[in-house]
Image 1 (spheres, rainbow, N blue to C red):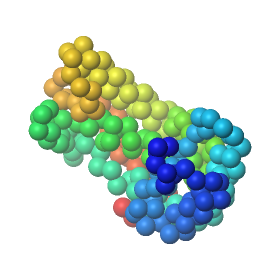
Image 2: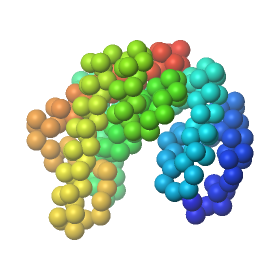
Image 3: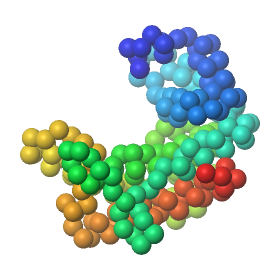
Length: 213
């Protein structure tokens, strides 16, 4: 992003952009919000980031329509699990029938945690910390948060092992995984994880988007 002049702007410009995105939550603006909301200071004056984040929280918490759009976007991801607990695979020309671990499994948990952060004004940018903070604020049960965090960590471990094996074989790294490469134990746990994620996406939709998907 830093190489693009469009995104190298002073604080006042960023405030105007975020306010416009929040007040006019069309699909493109919602996408921009989800991309840029998880910002971190890596150099320069950290206070600039803190000031901008404080304004974002103020505007987003006061705008229920915006929150409903964010929640709806978060709940629209299709978790790859069928009615009979079968994996719903997508076809890749090079890798065959696979699961996309990044977009179909990891991203939904990140999106869920982001909805809580926007709704509650949580300054954390780490997804697990956001879920823990949502418990402290009373918006999420301890068991539900623990289950989501366990899912998140398990899927990450599956992804890391998959990519480690690709490195050993001299293959390019991807997030696409064939379930047949997993043990039966891992496949069943992955199905359990998808089921938990899908249930919580439904909860996000009911709580913040009025059940609309």
